[in-house]
Image 1: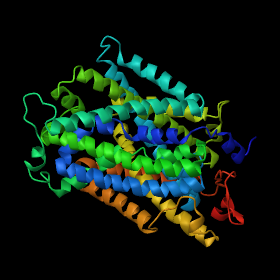
Image 2: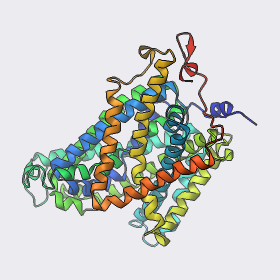
Image 3: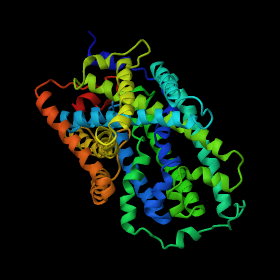
Image 4: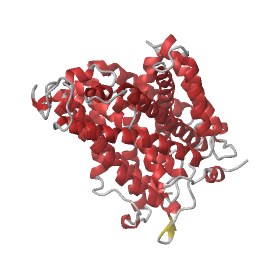
Length: 480
C-alpha cells in the first residue's frame, strides 16, 4: 500500500498559470451573474447593489490573499481543508472539507438540471432527463481524464463567458450614454440611479443582499484547490491572485452598472435573465438564443469546476483519514476516480430530493450550500493566522515568504469580521434566517460527529515534500 505522500505526488502538476486563472474565473462567472443579478439589484437598488459588490469584492480579495500565502507554502490538493486541519485543528478541517464538498456537490446536481432545462428551448420534444444524463456523461468524462485535459477544457468554457461579458459591457455602456439607441426608451444615463433615491430599499437592503453577492463571488477559492496540480505554484498563484480579483471586480461592477442604468431596479428583479432583456432592447438579433448558449456554457463550466473541486477535497479528506481510504485512490491518469463517482452519485440523488423532499431534506441541503462558501473564506483567514503564528514561532522569517499577506494581522481579522457580519445580517432577514439556522445546525452536527468518531484517530496531513527550503530548515520542517 502506498503512503499518503506517495499518493500525493501522483497528482500531476500539469496546470499552467493561465489554467489556474481561468478555472477560478469559471467558478465565479456563472448563474449568479447571468441569472441572479436581477434579483440582487431588486434587493438593494442600483447604487446599493454596486456598493454591495464592492464590499463583496473586498471580502473576496482578503480571502484570496490569505489563501495565496497558504497555497504557496503548502500547495496540496484539498487546499483550505488541509490548511485548516494543520493550522486550526483536525475537527475544523473535517467540518470545512465536508461542508464545502456538500455545497459543491449539490451545486453540480442543480447545474445538470439547469442545463437540461435550457436545452428545452431548442429541443422541446426531448425529455429533460436525457439532456441531464448527456451532461453527466460529458462532465464526468472530462474530469476522469488527465488534469491537463480538464484544465484546457475549462479554459475554453470560461473564455466564452468572459467574451460574452465583455461584449455585453461594451454594448451596454454604448446604450447607457446614447451611442446606441434603445427600443422605445430614451437614453438612460444615470436616471435610474437617482430616480428613487440612492438607497431605495434602505441601507439594510445593501446588507441583506450581501449573502447573494458573496454567493456570486464564491468559486474563487478553487484556485487553492487546484494549487496541488499547478506548475510552479510559487509563481502561478501570486500571478493568478493579482489578475483574478481585479478583473472579476471590473467585470461584475461594470455589468451590474449597465443593468442598473438601463433597467428600473424593480423590473430587473423579476426578470429571469436581465442580460437577455438588455440585448433585446438594443436590437441584437437572436438575443435570447445567444444568451441561452452563453448561460448553458456558464452552467457547464460551473459544473465542470465543481466536480473538480469536490473530487480534490474528498481526496484530501481521504488522505487525512477523514473519509474512507478508497476515496483517495487515483486512476492511471492521476485523477481521484472513486471520489468523482461518489460526487456524481450524490449530485444525482440531490436532484431527486428537489422533487420528492423539496420542503425537508432539499431545504436543508440548500441551506448548507448557501453558507458553505462564507464559512470557507472565514476558515481560510483563520488558517492564515494560525500558519503565520506557527511559522514565526518555529524560526521562520516573514520576509522569506515568497508570497505573504501585507498588513497582517489586519487583513485576516477583517476577513473574519466581515464573514461574521454577513452571517448576522442573514439572520436579520426573515427569508434567509431559516437557511442560516439549518446550515449552522449542520455544522454543529459535523463537529459533534468528528469528536465522537474521529477524535482518537491519527489524522495525517499530506505535505508536499518537493518545496524549496527557507534558510537552513525546509519549509515542511518550519510549518511542522
